[in-house]
Amino acid sequence: MICCYWALISRPIKLTLFLIVLVELTACSLINSGDSRLILGNEETLVGTALLVCGRECSERGQCGQSEQGEMVLLNSEIPATFGHDMALTEGTTVEIDHNEVKTAVQLSDNEQFPVSFYLVSQPEHGQGWVAGWCIGQ
Image (cartoon, rainbow, N blue to C red):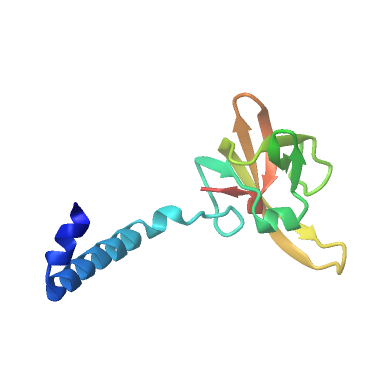
């Protein structure tokens, strides 16, 4: 039924309607653009509630794994570390940030040193653990 009425509308009115819809869609995407951006904990210091993320850098740094439950983010229950993990939580798990520390990491392939933010996070069902900043976001 609508298509029959659409044929009766003049070309300038169609163009005007198209432009109105285009402006509304553009405005909505500009207003909500900040909501879709995930801020990672190695880019800036995070506080409060956060989300475990197994993104590109987290995976490339060996901080992700696979299980029957899906993709997992690896944590250490004792110290901030990029190895010796003894915890794994499903990607997308919501955690509470309790503390953060910046440590110097050394890349074994070329001995490059760089700062890494680590977060002590807690999750009611799993307790506390340390996670690298490139695996946590808000």
